[in-house]
Image 1: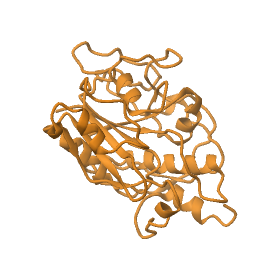
Image 2: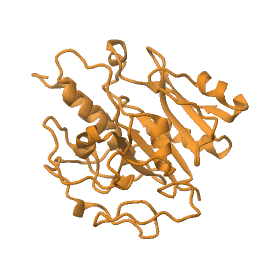
Image 3: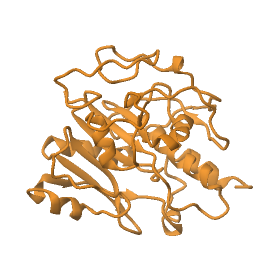
Image 4: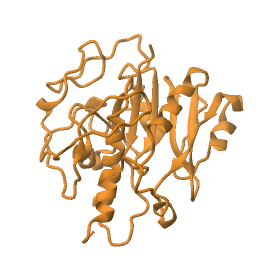
Amino acid sequence: MARRVVVALLGPVAWTPPGIDPTRWRTALAEDVVDLLATLNEVETAVAVTPGDRWLADAVVWPGTAVLEVPEPTVNAVFAALAGTAPTADARPALAPPPAQAAPPGQAALPAEAASPVGAASPGEARPVEAARPVEAARPVDAASPGVAGPAGEVTPVAGDRAGRGGYDQAAVVVADAPDVPGLTLGKLLRKLSSRPIAVAPVEGTGPGLLGVAARLPVPDWLPALDLDRDAPADVRRAAPRPGDVAVTAGWRRLRGPADLATLDPAFEGWEATRALLSAPSR
């Protein structure tokens, strides 16, 4: 079975609703996406941040979640780091557990971890956010899984015959400003890799951009440098040897302006941290 990872790219957020602190808004969005990834089954999950944004990863990840530090918040940087072709900014292993660090204020409760079929989200019971996430609290990882942080913070060397630093065969990178994206939408990205080397999910609603990109590892040489805020599926297909090499899956909204915010459905499950921040009296 192919070993797969879904990475939430915790990049900058272009827009914040009036009256809400930008740091709290960005943290809430990231927390909801990370919580969704924790419900996915048959995939491993990780977050990617630049060294300057490590605080955000430490504030929202679950114990044992891999943190990938990249020199820039781009899809290509994440794929390069997973393939072991780009060093992290501080020369630490690319996949490492978060150090003990207090999370910034404004955190909402995290749901209890649950497993469900790939792409299917399931609600869990709330638990308080921990003031710090010690490395010792990380979930044990099979020692045979290369490149993944173990319970004591060690990183097992990558097996030479595996595709990337973490030994992954497939990877998907998704944005962190889509707090209510359904798990099934993310699952479709990976499923398309059974017949195509690249899959992309467009953004629905206002503005250009992509929701996520998935690839077989190692990534094809023809994959262009992608900008998740500007590029469209057509841009990726133009770079491919054949347009059919790029699968286009279902899209979803990103919260990048008032029009996108107005489409949030209060009856839709998930996006608890974002919902709590939007409904807070003082904001």
